[in-house]
Amino acid sequence: MFPTKPLMLALSLGLATLSAQAQAPISLSYLGQQILPTSTQYAGTTVGGLSGIDYDAASGRYFAISDDRSGLNPARFYTLGLDLSQFRRSATPGMAGVQLQSVVTLQRPEGGAFALNTVDPEGLRYHAATGSLFWSNEGQRSGAGFQNPTVREMRLDGSHVRDLQVPEAFKPSGSAAGTAPGDRGIYNNLAFESLTLSTDGKTLYTATENALAQDGPQASLSKGSVARIVGFDLASGAASAQYAYAVSPVVLPPVAGGFATNGLTDLLAVGDRQFIAIERSFSAGAVTPGTPVTGNTIRLYHVDARQATDISGLSSLDGASFTPAQKTLLLDLSTLKNEDGSFLATDNIEGLTLGPEINGKRSLILVSDNNFSPTQFTQIIALEVSAVPEPGSWALMAAGLAALGGLLRGRRRSSGSQA
Image (tube, rainbow, N blue to C red):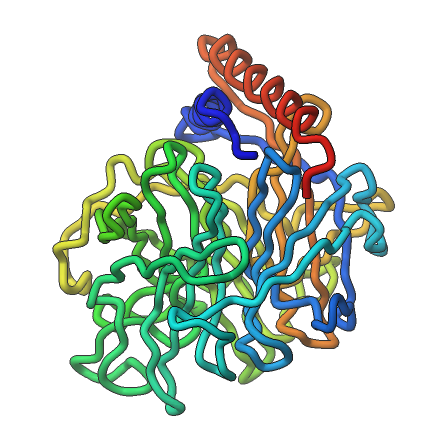
């Protein structure tokens, strides 16, 4: 049912090779997209708010978590099938390539569904070794009350397994805005959006979208924000090292008085302390000339924390000396075009995962959180991943990816019609 150790080894080898070149490790190209309207219904639920996605190579299924705070329906995740051959480089691609397979309600530690506004699910990762799912809850810091961010493990039926040990520094205290002297912890709606497993399966990483209150301000047009990436040792559940990540400033100015933000919305481990990261900048009413008006600027970065300072011992980053993770731009989705020459309209992209092999190369799948808004859409984008190696690394790259591809095909044949 689960990938074998050789498969995991091949995956690590292939991805580590892809990320070996610090300046231009990966090339990404646009394969196509599918779009689910906000009105899409499945098994008595409204499909939307998809904030995290992960792929199980053994079964060919995807897991996608909804950030519905039990408002429309109980907090939940979906399993999906994606037929990438039906994805189109078109502004109106349809949704035929997306097959909704099941929906599962998230369970409280004591059992039962979460009540309204008591949880904010965001990140999701499947752990093949245990057959369980890890998920992040963003928490809350507002006039309506404070909720600590959490990282939890659950079974595939949604039942609770355990909480991982989130450090005290992330728990909100002080004023509702988080901007008063002495305030600590997450800013509201800028906490644990991301989640990823290390390539050896021993560490789980999440990150705040922006700084903690004690570390600095939120991102704006004039300045960025320093987020924290935090690791958890899965054997003990304890937090381990932390690394600073420099979130860029907001990309585009909003219309007068409009809302604007930029944040780190997901991570995908591709090597030892190396990741692909999504930064999603949104500016209300913003327009890039010649492109569709969505207000979103989506950028993917290669992130390397191998030389970064472990900041877990720093109570505040404000005025502290440290080395942040390095980041290199991989792709600005604003540059992508459909077959007719029109620019790709991007919604609120918040999740990514490696998908299956297409034409001998790995795919990268992105998903958007439509905020259940009639002016937005659930978008699933497929990209093709190519290495950009130096000449001496061609043989290693080819061997790693060929082994990975062969094992994936073998596991798909042996798993047959498993869902």
